[in-house]
Amino acid sequence: MDHLGYNKTSSFSHMEFILLGFPGVTKYRPLLALPFSFIYAVILSGNSVVMLVIVLEKSLHTPMYTLIFSLLATNVVYTTAITPKMLLGLFGLNQITLAGCLVQIFTVYSSIMAESTIVLLMAIDRYLAVHQPLHYQEIVVKHVIVHSAVNGVIRYSFVVLPLVITAARLCYCRSNIIPHFHCESMMLFSLGCEESRAQIVGLVVRTLMMFCDIPIILISYLKVLQTVLRIAVGMARNKALHTCSTHLVVVVLIYSSGFLISVLYLPGNSTSYDLQNIFSAIYFLFSAMVNPFIYGLRMEGIKSNIRKYWGKKKDLPVKQIRS
Image (cartoon, rainbow, N blue to C red; front, side, top):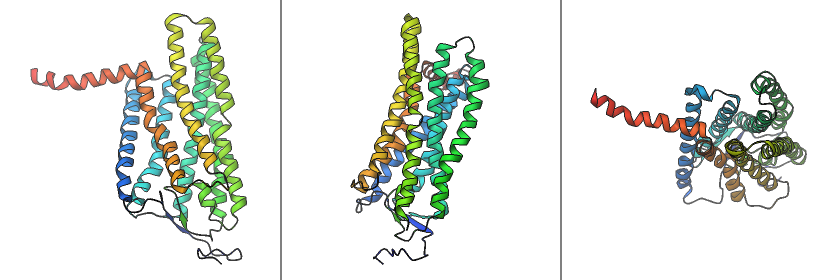
């Protein structure tokens, strides 16, 4: 048995853990709450503004903007599952039960799967809009969305649930300290008595979540670009290319950071915990922070309506004074 209480023959298992995010920062640890609080406030406000515009403006009640709304809502869900607990942990309130860990893992990984599904749907949506413009609404609403919702539930069941079940059944006899700001599955599994088998499960799940949709997404956008360059001219071509480039920026942000995180958490990787924490924070928070600005600034339908509602808000006091 070592100083952490590890014993392969012991049936003891920790039921409460300590989330020690950024373990290398000790003296000025609470100061980290300032930038992360600001980022979280930007995420909540930015995503909420764009979602509210999509809800209020009837002209935006189309499949594409519904998918954008869903993507931004997913951003809010998984950042809320992580950030408040991380902020409390920076002030020493960093205990979490195994049940709390499992809920956090399920919420975060389900949100990542949902995000991947939404990005895939956005690629298919653009493909159908270009290749089947006359039947676009009927195909997307009646077939693509329904089938994708069913597909999403099946994917959650076969990918996320085994991860949570594995984490729930594992005995944690190595330590109860997770050197991360949330219950990262690979780090949690590394505390288990049967570390290697659990980490293999975690690695397989992470790979499936990150990369199973990439080929379809890339093929869809390549087909769209080929078609647009071949048949569209003038403003129609510019509009289609602008929309696709906006979507591709989001795709690159999500999958490039996801790939980097997967490499950092490979078993045997010698990367420091602080560096892993930093890149995890970038992965979870950066895209969620910039997505509303990308869509708000690059999607003309959203940008023009934000200007419209902002203009009404500025004119309101003047009208009240005149009345």
